[in-house]
Image (tube, rainbow, N blue to C red; front, side):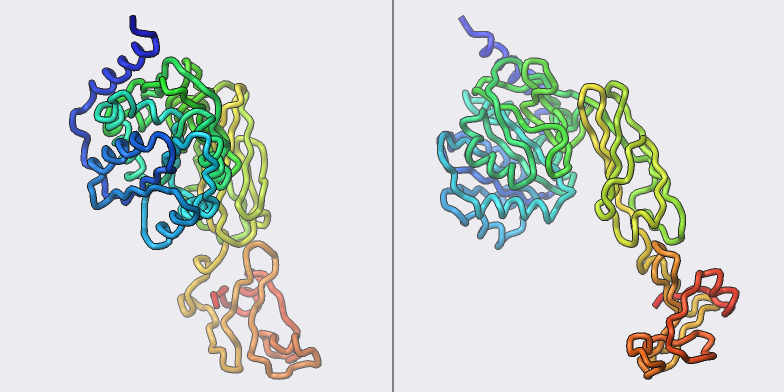
Length: 419
């Protein structure tokens, strides 16, 4: 008599095979498949062969990692859009710190790329599943990373496999570790992009003593969303991803728009909308430069609080069940994009030849504006002050005169011009 696990696994394969026979052509994306030399290398080769068949031989490279530093050299010499790390190395130390650091550095150089963590990857490839469920899953992973400019796939199994190599890598990436040991049903978030494109998947096999993937808010600030889960419980995911699905709470920043630039002394209206999840929600806004900003759904922040520079603004929301999501935008405060071109209006724009220099805006984060300066001419007794000249050029005392934009307009009849 077939066991329940065998029946569930057979159903998963049948469900997967009832999808598109031929997946749509993916965008070109260079992928490196890293096999951590170990005990299920053949299944790793089978997975790579399915990947190569879909991505194209010219876009897929297989690398067997067996010595410290070898992969680091490979990454230094070649460009890749995706890195897949397959760790089924059983009870080995996997002493490759140079290589874990190299993968982490590669990801940190592309911090907007996505991550897929699969703690039951082996189940899709053993017992003859490579050409069915395994193929469909590989195509979905590759395609979804390719259309999002690349990323990482971290593939392992239960804790005895991940405890050495993979968990060293997740620590370097700023992710929680894999763990646990599971069997049984493995439903998917069927609205998740990983379940829908290019192949339709409803469940996956889960009979290789599988593990739980990291999920939720991670030490590196990323949020891993549940894609597939053990025993009907979405908070014990076997597969998670930074690609968002439909499970749990969600939040979106409604304003300002991504890429917005702010120049004047004004207030920025930060607006968010939570959805799904269970109320009450808690919020935490932050800036990559200025740090924590506030803890309300909507927030008004003065430019002086942020300061000049390019800020990644993040809002993190938790629901009553402890589920988490975040959203980010990038804004710029001040800088060259806020300066008018010299000569565009009535601005004074003189040469830096010992006479007056271009009127320059010091910044929107403070109330003071430097009006003009000269090449050092020895004005006054203070060598530092001698760099500056009264714009009215009346007393030549070498003291820096400071004005607001309105005072500049009133006293000199000109606007503020960039250096």
